[in-house]
Image (cartoon, rainbow, N blue to C red; front, side, top):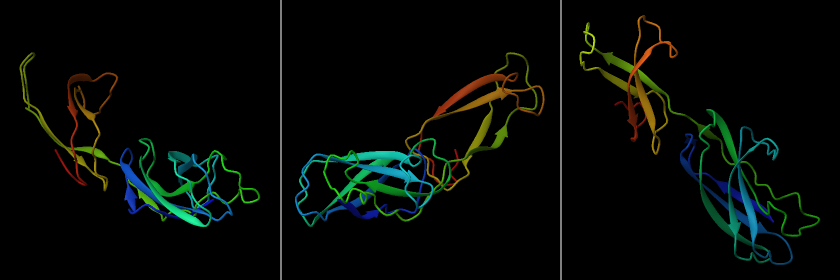
Amino acid sequence: MKISSINIGVDSISNNQPVTVQWTTTNDGAIAAKPNWQEYIYLSNDAVFNERTDRYAGSLTRTTALNSLSSSSAQQSITVPATLAEGNYYFFVKTDASNSIYESPDETNNISSPSSLVRVVNADLKPTLLTSPNSALSEQEITIQWTIKNDSRAIIQNRSWTDKLYLSSNATFESGTDLLLSSVNNSQLLSKAGEY
């Protein structure tokens, strides 16, 4: 059993976003591979597979037999880990990941070649504009406006975040001592370089 091809279809992704991995499994053995067997998807920061250090990203259970000298294609949508750092990555697929199919002496070729390089780019939210009155009285209600920019090449979708407004006695932000005035929850699609 081996993975004869792997395809991602994109050259860049961002964390916590879905990506579809496609691959083909080939049975080069003399008898059919009987279900059920597992196929695991991994993310690696280099083109050399290492099961101890590469990041498990998802799995698929094969529920149909694969005849001798036959191939079968599959695809699985996975979510890019939310804590994955920016950088270059490769995907790998491992067939018969739980060793449920006896393949001796060919147990060492269950790992795919690396996918094409995929760049992980993550969102970068930055305040770009803040407007407020020059002065205000104690307990006076005032209006404060601000603009936030997604200063990155990543699209933000299916994510929630919070903008917090603080009052400070100086021009340096200090989260431990500055006074929190308000919080605004956000959940929206924000394009590359998009603003709100």
